[in-house]
Length: 428
Ligand code: SDX
Image (tube, rainbow, N blue to C red; front, side, top):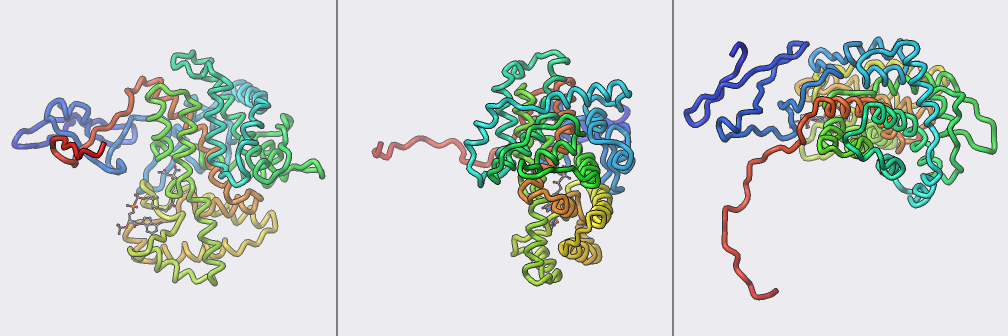
């Protein structure tokens, strides 16, 4: 075998193939290990385990590289648009002018949702977290489009589901916000671009005229690009494993939304702002909170810091940090928690605990500061992450299904009781 690894177990040696990707990443293919040796591998959190081979997104955590289908995140954030990036991630190539025009037209035409969505919304108390509402409304699409449950639908039918999801997610998100604050919902305005339409549905109200600020719309479109995909993160892996049972795209994406909700994942952007607010209200003593983050007996973590893959700066954090300065200046917003965030970053980058563990600001550290300046409420921050990540989830689901990957079903090592006999205690 040209490239292989050997594993020695109980005196027996097993030779396993080593595969290599287009960026020279290597992996030991253990798909036949148990059949050969009766032995499995174990890796809680999959820190050293690849779940698939994918052509969608490439990360280099040591060098801080992120590329969607080979294009760098820096170029795409500067030159592209969220819908163009969505097409690239899902279909593998940048669209031609005609493909892009048709994609935008189709999405614009599907921004409306069934009127019965209002009845579902009205069933939620105003305290409902928007992420729970969003995952419920996405899964409810299986009821409005029951044909989507057929795992053997044609490419065109899958494309229609893709368009419907990308088109309707902003409507669901804005409507959940309006329902939360007791305002009437705003219907989509198909004369507007994707980001502007979302902002108008979010913030327009019948009592006054509303014009979308192009600075805000441009900043939002850039943020959506930066969140669009990130290879096999927790929520993308969730979408793939749910979809591997041949559950519908809507059910798989709904599961991904719930995985993203967690504060260790996409929920971190909300947790960062809450943390910065706490530090500000506590007098701004960043050294005290840094000490808490390093104290093993203290559950406090510096939210927005650290990453499973990036052991260098998250390239998205670098772009967002610069955008935060630009957007707040253009909007004339002076937010004291931006200074607290910069102070924390400065201290962490020279603190041995953080340096030793290679903990850098991640995508969530500065994004909330921009969302706040754009007027997005804090508990909607992770919803914004979900809107951005949707094309990535769709691309991952589509690749998994097109590659006919098997149902995900990990093995385990049992650590419970050995066999024992039932004793009737006579109480039943
Ligand atoms: C996202 O995977 C992706 O790609 C995700 C994402 C995407 O685009 O999909 O990039 C989006 O989820 C970004 C991450 C957002 N989460 C946070 O900001 C929450 C705070 N960060 C962490 O909890 C943590 O860093 C994780 C969850 C992001 C990563 O955790 P790992 O890889 O499991 O690492 P770990 O928890 O084992 O930490 C290693 C060490 C530990 O210390 P020791 O036991 O070695 O002494 O670093 C410490 C941890 O205690 N550590 C932190 C810390 N993060 C890690 N200590 C203080 N503050 C932190 N933020």
